Amino acid sequence: MATRGSSPAIELSVGEHDVRISNPDRVYFPETGATKLDLAKYYLAVGDGIVRAVRERPCMMHRFPDGLAGDKVHQKRIPRGAPPWVETVRVDFPSGRNADELCVTRLADVIWAVQMSCVEFHPWNSRRADTERPDEWRIDLDPGPECTFETVRRVAAVTRDLLEEIGAVGWPKTSGGNGMHVYVRIEPRWGFKDVRRAALAFAREVERRIPDEVTTTWWRKDRDPAKLFVDYNQNARDHTIASAYSVRGVPRGTVSTPIRWDEIDSVEPRECTIASVPARFAEFGDLHDGIDEAVFTIDPLIEWAERDERDGVADAPE
Image 1 (cartoon, one colour):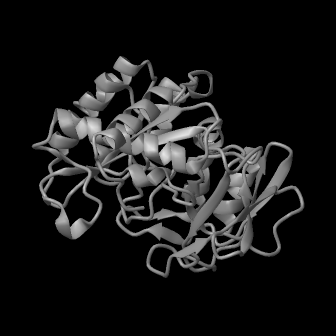
Image 2 (cartoon, one colour):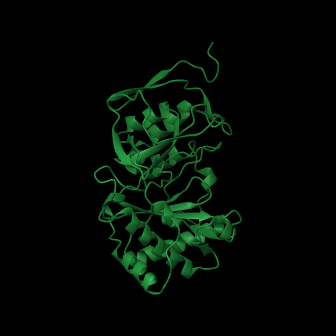
């Protein structure tokens, strides 16, 4: 009889492809006992959502070959032995090196990555058509170690109001940890430096509105631990965060879960897990459906950045 963690491989039919899942009973999430097969079934259940979130983006895989009890591998280059139908995109790094990263175009790519022990999907905010011009502005609401989730909720509300003022549509989600993310689809006209510059200007405007609860101070040692950091540098080149619907590599198997704006006062991130999110997806569908049609121009934010520079506000570290 096969022991748990060494059970016979199975095959999952995913669209046009059959994907082999080895060791399907290996426990990945020790708090709940969820297995590698449970992880694959989760991604199948939210298939349209995860594909929309990472489609045609260079994607770093956070792999756990031995489950969460083992080491974590940050995989930029696609592992050897990938089937020929799995697509890649080449990206360059400041070191002069490059990598052929996973480029998801269909759900089978996601399930193949799970077979390769990928738990988290960390896509770039640009697509393979032009990897140097982001089409996604990411607002990362990152609470300090003494910052409550009630503060996160209040800052998210201010973020929503400020986005509405400038005519941008924000698409919120839990981070899968203690914070929230808000994504805005933008025209792919600007490079990373300009998008980061715009994100910094927005973060500083949020800070001006609620200075007692928000900081844009980059160095962790200089931050008030009770404040929330608006992390503008998530828009710098080669910075990635977990995508919508990505499971997080934590024992509970939490999920970075799209939510409605009217849920920010009630959502409990710890309850958004691989066990609960499929039912939510079945009921509401993908709450980020429509993001690709709600395109914003960052010109107003560039004007804010120029205003700050004229006023002598220094740039922030990257």
